Amino acid sequence: MSGRGGISGLKRPRPGSDGSKELTADERNVYNLIKDKGDMGIWKGDIRKELNITNAKTIDNCVKSLQLKQMIKEVPNVQAKGKKRLMAMEFEPSKELTGGVWYHDGMLDEDFIENLKRVCLQRLSKQLMECAMRFR
Image (cartoon, rainbow, N blue to C red; front, side, top):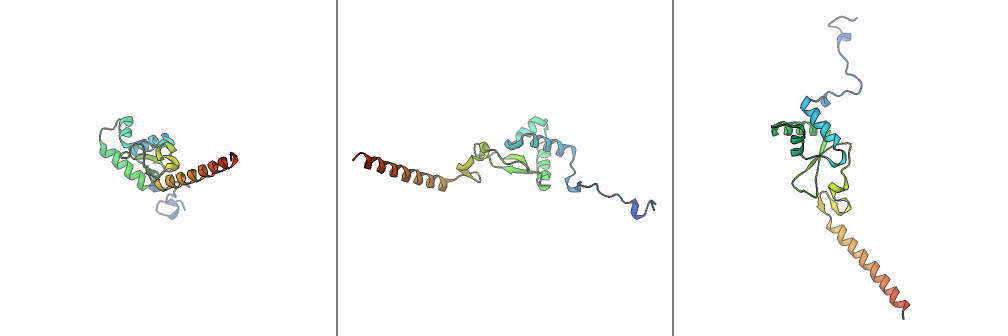
């Protein structure tokens, strides 16, 4: 039954291995660097410098491939709007990058800020009124 052309001659995929996740050497290097940066991610230009890759197209191809394989994602950086950071999928971006509660999808959350101002003013007004009542 272990003949060459028979059914048992076919290779079975190893458990947990996914053919779509096989990486080239460049992709593996780029992915490992991105993953090492954790919740801060890394900018494409910094990948190029750190891996000493002179061809920007190589980085672009690796990033595109890793995104298609859903291994990395782009994260907006509120401090540098034009520089999206790349991050491994298993990480949530740090508040430093996203701006925390003050930002939503990379944009200043003006509605949240207005509501917060309104609540603060109401609270202060109430306390002033209570204070004024005590000193009468």
